[in-house]
Length: 116
Length: 111
Image (cartoon, rainbow over all chains, first blue to last red; front, side, top):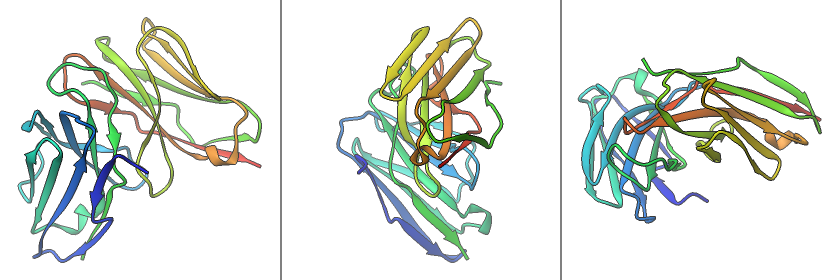
């Protein structure tokens, strides 16, 4: 069992739909991350939140919109996605935020997203 | 460009043998090094962290770090079929708030 909880586990949506992915952790971690992972590739960083503020956006298209309502929650809002956006979306957290710290990230189980 | 490279796979070893996974990195400022295991269709699972030169052992796993050579490795002793997975090397430095992942090495342990 993972301490980072992601919902839903699977999501199928059309290109005109709006949906959201949710991530929750109760470990008191101050940094949270969204990754996208395609088959047989490593995780690809999308966004980093540090102390509830967006600290890194890896030039992600605006059809992906992150939100961090509080230190335990991270959302990823999806709108007008393309078929190539089909992937495993991973949330992770780590104890420290900012440009310091050496603790590893802990991943949730991911959301398998399919765009029709 | 900060890069992390791993030995190309797939790597096949017989059950009970030692599996050796290698990783090199380009940023000399890197401070933290992690090995993740990822089963097909699952999320990455942290198996080792190492921060200082030398060896770190945890059960059947040993991580080795050589910062002068910019090299980190993972040895799996007494390999089991359940060790069959993709192993991701990840590197983090003090100067940036993200982890750089290598491409991964697929390991297959043959019964």
